Length: 192
Image (cartoon, rainbow, N blue to C red; front, side, top):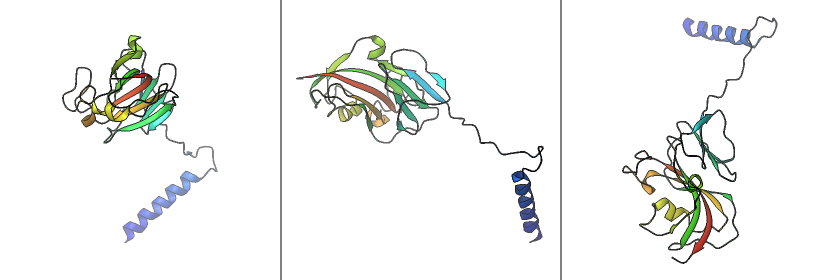
């Protein structure tokens, strides 16, 4: 009982002296500095991501933001948690034709691994849009589920869990079990 009372008295004494502002020698509390680091990937520049202390752009999740410039810039918090389901977010609206399954689509896009922040593929970096069928078996399931309904001119983020991407057998440049982040701009829709 005495031990508990003595401990409480010490806590009160420490708290009282820390809050006192009577003398210039009294320490004052300062806010803790943010220690969050972001991996920053420019979708137009192949290579390793750079680091930054803050993120810019539209927040997709607490770990991911995308700056919607002419060529997007992706911010991923170091240690970002993988996602368990497909997340889609519109960055900018479109006004053209709507993409549907089995259409032939033309897109600009970039793909970033969530755990590394590394760009693994980007039409923006190649300088050439990509055209392919929006069909089962032709694309990863995250694209098949996440692209339909987009309008020409729309830019959308797809945050794709591993089981809707490459799982544990990815191509080179992607980690096994990796959550993938794509920024996709729909440029055209044609008959497949």
